[in-house]
Length: 361
Image 1 (cartoon, rainbow, N blue to C red):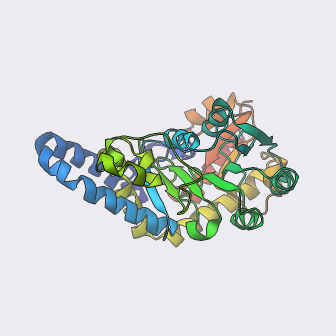
Image 2: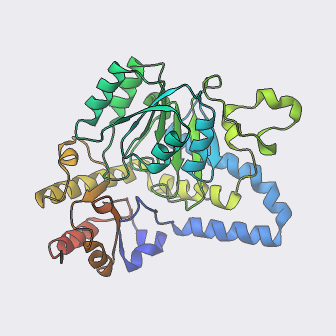
Image 3: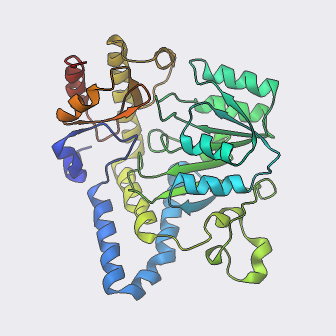
């Protein structure tokens, strides 16, 4: 995993620990965006000729990354846009369960649509709490982030899979934005029915790129109200529109969504397992170091597994100090959030730890 500074020029001027907010884009993604814009400017006919083939390539790459065999993929500009489309197709009488303080695009949207809902407290024994809530009042729909954006709390893959096996009638909708690109994932075996992902964070494809994966056989349970010319070839086929196409009512931005191709090619060329192993190693080391400095919430310390996201329990006024030390991170909740991707190093962690021992507040 050499020459990362050349692949990610943004690493040259800072210790970048803000991937949970926005991932760095690699040089080849920048080159792709520039080439597509030049093509649109100078050869618009060729731009349109490449439209379908390039999006098909991205679809195939995503199926490879997420081990999708029987599902369908829809493209959207961001998770929030696609999620509203999904919610529009769920029966208004549905009982929906979600995690308290989950990503606002989930919690605010569910409340806006006036569903019956139950919020589950975000605490150390979150999986046990979810299971008890299911046993007490099995929801029609369970919506959750695999990794919580605030503090990195993660639902284990085995827990999600087992829960789905016990409650097969519940529709599982997952936000994988803070998860996909951090460890190996098999959609077919996950127990998840619908997976939505914004790709500008851990998949480093840039803004405007997102997708949803749908397990087959959901057409009767999810019937989005969105429709448009891009979703259907002719009006006579309105009744036969595939579920995933209903999230694509209009044209798709090839410059943004097509950026997923070079972004994923970067992952494949470096090697998925190498990337996941490095993320796991640096995350485990970081968790140990942060725990020794008493910087983590108890619920994170008690988790047997680690995500690459941490909310450091320090005075938020220290954000300016860290930024002045060229450490790029963000305030979230009552702490400072950092995240470690494969383009980060142990040296980055050491530099952060040194700064944390000299905080002004």
